[in-house]
Image: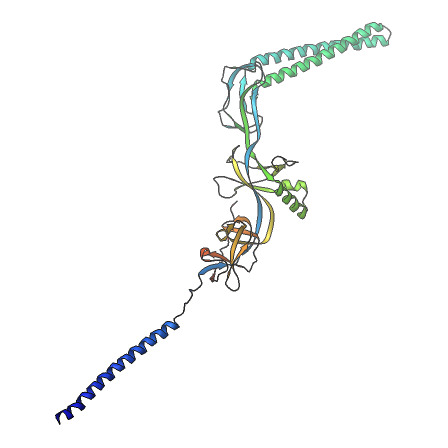
Length: 400
């Protein structure tokens, strides 16, 4: 009987234990199935497109320039020489100073040439007196011959004496002028306003003995020339633009030019074209051109290398983008633009001159194009981007 009561007690406990074990296995299986299901639903999510800054090109009126490198040259430079022989008596200026036209710079032994002038003037005065005497005799003999009181031979002698006196007087007058000129050469004066270089001779030296002796050099600095060369292509472009505007060849000489030194910003010196060679140099393919500029403060010295630009034409609606937005490859210059689908495209462009930090785009862009101006390394042609529209800052007016 005891065993009969024990059996029912054992079976319920085993069955409960089995039930709990089965429940745990089922829970683990369901959890594993959930994990497998979650793994099957976890697919690859691509990263979001990179962000770049884009902007439409700036539209503004610009002036296109022909740019070149030139050098300055004096308008006038003259070697001061001794044109008469003598001892240099004085130097009447300080080396390197500015002098006015007519200023006496050197004096060369004037006493000798003053005496020669006095001698020539005295000789002229004597011949003038002789001419008066011979003219009086000529008139007297002419009256006597007309009244038949003198012979024809006597009249002819009086005529010859008068003519000889006139010729001698003319010769004496020429000698007087030569003596006066030589006396004037004893004072070497400035032929124009300018700066005189250091003297090449000293007081007491004999100058002009065998040939004219150079004493110094005078240079005019205001105004000043700027010489530069223009390529044959630029010449053709300028001439075509002149024809389009109806300009005459003489009108080209009134075109302004702007000049800047290597250490200056912009082009602060303004002048105008002065000369253009009539032919193109076949060996270099360039045309020699010259401009003239005022130089009151003598900032420009002869021999300087300068930057030159000449306005060629004007464009009312030029397109400009930041210069940093341009790239280059073997095919040339390009910019990266974002189309309507936010996909990057590479646009081949023809770049023009700089205007501040902006570059003129001659060809290859439209006003509505969105150009990548920042984040260029993240913009890959053919791939999508997240464009952030910006506005390009307008450049300030360029300094002259």
